[in-house]
Length: 97
Ligand SMILES: [Zn+2]
Image (cartoon, rainbow, N blue to C red; front, side, top):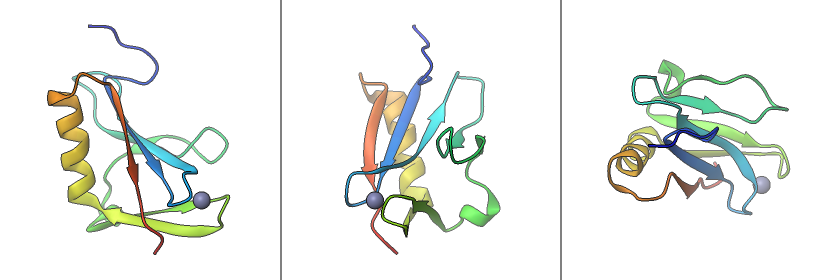
């Protein structure tokens, strides 16, 4: 299995205008899932945190609006990506709050 910088499974998050708003990713099987908001925005952090329940909310800096998604649905999607998909990444669109 090859492990690149995207890790073993990356869920790319976008606002409804297709701007990237961060990534949920796992770098290796034994590592925890992290949220990467983007290098210019801030550091990676473990995800989901308590504050991410039950809705995960982040901000599209280009639209200057918050976007939000159901945390469990995002977790399921990311888990399925790691377990079943032949691709290592997938995109999820988060609606505006
Ligand atoms: Zn946007």
